[in-house]
Amino acid sequence: MSRRVQVLGYYGMANFGDDLFRQVVTENAGKLWPGASVRTFAPMGLHRPYGDLGRIGSATRLATGTLGAAWADTFALCGGSVLQSVSGVQSLRRKLVGRRRFEALGVSVGPFDDPADGQEVLDFLSHFDRVIVRDTASAQRLGGGVTVGGDLAALVGEVPRHNPDTARGLTICPSDASGTSAAEFTGQVLDGLGGRDIPVNVLALNHHHELGDEGLSNEVAGGLREAGLGAVEVHSYRHLGVDGVIRFLAGSGAVWTQRLHGGIVSYLVGTPFVIVGHHAKCRDFASDIGLDPSLVLPTRGGDWSVASKTLEHPFGHWQLDPDEYMAKARSTYLKESV
Image 1 (tube, rainbow, N blue to C red):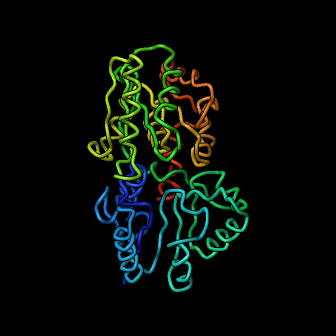
Image 2 (cartoon, helix red, strand yellow):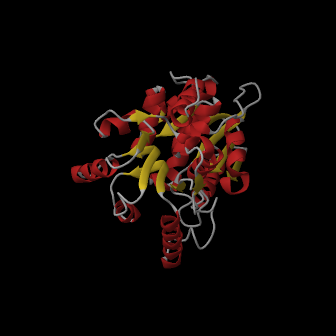
Image 3 (cartoon, helix red, strand yellow):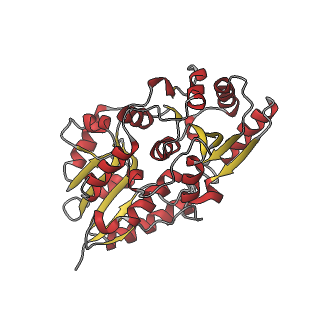
């Protein structure tokens, strides 16, 4: 009987980055787990009641998790910042150590609020058959000696390329998870524009009905219009889909993002970007690719005038070529020759 692999992640919650993980893992399942049967037991995009935050949603996710646990002989944690502690569902899965195989692919590890959490994660990972982390900082938090493969989004394959001759306008990606108000982010964007009146697209990369960015995006767009910008439009992952978002970012003149995968995908397609480092995983990614440090801005404050670099110079502001990043990911995860 072939191996039965349950792929685990923050899927089914309408978040672009996590749905991108699910897509690339599904497309590359034959190389990630040769000869195995692979399932996620989670929907693509947002499906109710699976994505609801109340008791019905929790019960639905528990039911699918139980079904997966009964079916699978291998749990594979794929993508996302999922290992800051061993709690909730992970603590339940830890009880299956020795009766199931475990893997972690493309995960961020830490940072840890409590050193005890870090030790618990380290102990948990010591039972895994395969651990490949997303960034160098995660490997260092584990004491080194762990393979760094890059973000799983780098397995996306053929992508449209940014062409500064045809790209148009600025795309901004607000994140409700950043803790920034619409007024704060609007002010930061205006500071970055420095009086320029160029087309601005506000792109909501999460359309969850409770956790998503659409409400914030509409507020930011309204603030930009009130400030006198003449061409401001709102777009959503809800309508574009995974591939549509990738094309949209590739066709943007520049991207200023609070969402990690707004930055990662912009990098992969070659679009200059600014990223808000409200979470360590954003800063860790920027460090790995050698992004101009001035383009990694804090959630509040910071000199947003530097963001104009991405409008004035339409080429990469990083040291590591995206093709090299993608080639390393394919070599590490898929064992493809570089």
